[in-house]
Length: 213
View 1 (cartoon, rainbow, N blue to C red):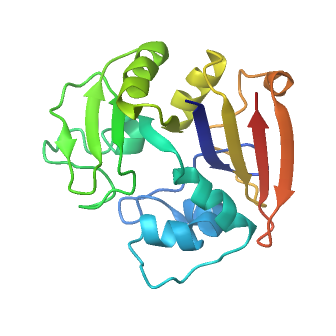
View 2: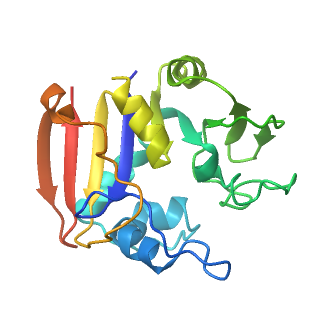
């Protein structure tokens, strides 16, 4: 079992955007940040529900397909699930509609108790209040030998990195400058020394950085 992280970040290290509005809850900058990943065949099928076979099949696709391979459980923060924006909606079931792409147990870190939500695709959202170590123990048990992915948001990923709990990291570095948001690197000086680091540039211009213990 490996603990892994997979994020899209900008050239200046930001993994979140700040131009969201009620009419555009993700914002234009988010589309710029994830465009290459979302354009791959795997992400179009798993996230957008497009089963036509459309989408890119180059280097970006190699990493997009690896995003799901071997994953037995996921950990994410309340913000990634959407609880911060929809705290008053007891029927909120996440951003992904009736077919979330995870297809594994997902542990949402939150201080607000909620009943688990189960989908026909195999995704089950469990809402827990736990430290990174305790959350990982629960996710590892649920993964049953599979990998555990720490999906986000940025603060949650940094907590797991700071606690030295992550075995593999993949950052898809989009060739854009955001200038503001949440930076993944803050507080993690020298982290690269603990990993073997490789890079690969995709046809889209995205640089794929891989860190492996």
